[in-house]
Length: 94
Image 1 (cartoon, rainbow, N blue to C red):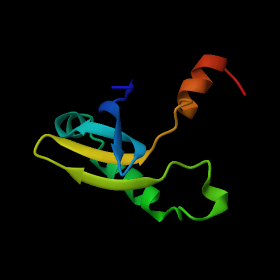
Image 2: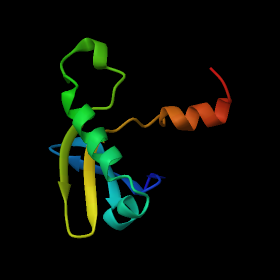
Image 3: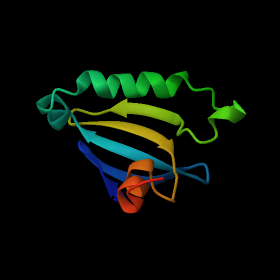
């Protein structure tokens, strides 16, 4: 795992020679926190982003979404520099 979130872990995965970040979210934890709607909204908003629009180059794109009996997965762009929250907590202000 390269990171942890409120619902699970983030892993580096690859397909066709390209690397992605895969968010693995425990369904039980998402339900326990009452966040099913938030997770579904995240996926819906990410799907609305046009990957070819140059204005969205700073937005993480979703490539795949799937689930198994225990987890939900989002395969998104891999940003090796860390996410906004990481930098905000580190720097305290921009």
